[in-house]
Length: 277
Image (cartoon, rainbow, N blue to C red; front, side):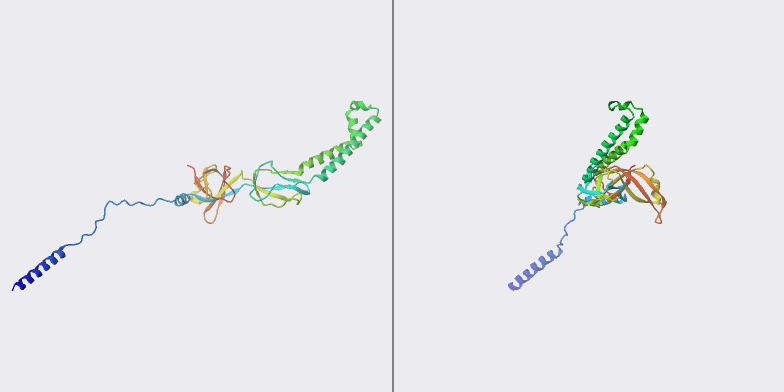
C-alpha cells in the first residue's frame, strides 16, 4: 500500500513541474527603438558626378595652331624640337640653318661694293672734284655717279644678303606646345613647308552645346566657370565670345567662350561649364 502512495506522489510532482514549465513562455529579445541609422557619406567621385550633372559638357580647343616655316632652302644644323607636346616660349630659338654658303656670298658682295665705291669716286674725280672733297659735288651729280658705278646696286645686294643671314636662326613666333613635327636635324628645310606646328596655349576656348530653351542664359559676354576632368577642383573663368545663329536638328545651339590661360589647360580636355550668377 505504501508503495502505491509513494508512486502516486511521484507522479503528481512530475505532472506539476511539467505544467509549470509549459506556462513559462520565452520572451523574444527586445529591439531598441532609438537605433541611429547612419547613411554612408558620398564619396568624392559621387560628389564630382553630382556637380557634373548640373553642368554643360564641352571641350577645350586651341584658337590657333601656327606653322613654323623656314624662309630659305638650307640644311638644318640645329633642331631644338624633340617631341610633340614640348613647351616653347615666344622668341625661343627652335632651329638653325647652315649659313656657310650665305656667308661666302656676303664676302663676294662686299668685294663688289668696294669696287663700285672706287668707281663712284673715280667718276667724281673725273669731273674735277678732289678725292678729299667729293662731298662738295652737287647731290644730283653724286646720284648719277652712284648709278653709273653700280654702287647703289652693290649696296642693296649686300644689305639683302645680310638680312637673309637672320633667316638662318628660326625662333618660335608664339608661346605654346609643339605639334605635328614635320622635319628633323640635318633635314632639308624648304620655303613654304612647315618644320612643325605650335598650338597657342595662351589663347584657348571652350566649346559646348545648350538646349534651345537655355539659350537666354548664355548672352555675349556672360561669365562662365569651367572645370576639367583632369583637375576637377580647379575653376577657370571664361567669357562667352560666340553664339551660333543656327539651331541644329536636335534643338541644340553651339556656343564658344574665351578661356583665361592656365598651365593646366590643354586643347582636347573635357570641360564642364556652369554660369556664374
